Image (cartoon, rainbow, N blue to C red):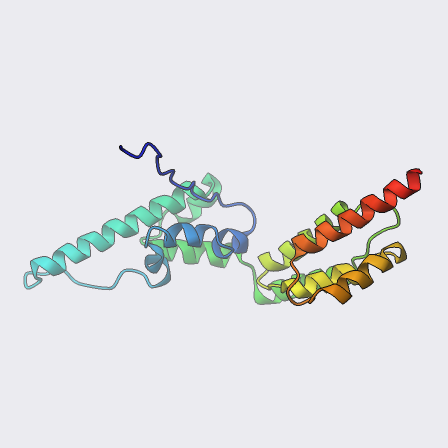
Length: 210
């Protein structure tokens, strides 16, 4: 019996306002890696002059490399908006196209450092407000974590877990102690923590209605 399932090609990641997220955070790079084309962006086309002494195999290799590079450029052109496209249309290779976008949109090291510093401070100052839902607070916390990741720094899961636990109000003291005593905070997932806190929140809300 023929397999009726059809392979669905992943969509080309569209370029937004965040170069780092589009290029490095498992989006466009992964898209090209999945097609074994990333080396053309990373290393470029190996220089090879086609002359009268060039073998048929070498000539074919050059043609294949140029065709693959053209395919990568086509993917990049489909991913970016027209106003950005006009800036990179004159680039001869996919590597040159990518490098042009990186220089224009990634920003200087100084600016990125300032952004990260501000985001780290925002992360440290996060605290749940009185009456604020767990879902809302975790959403805000993970949004800041994502912004930090977009700017090139990854916060490990255990750091996020510990931050959430120490940012809760006193009414969560019982469940925080329980979680710390019964779990290894270096291995507990954010989803597991979220579930435990939600159960505790629901119990408290149930008691308050009695």
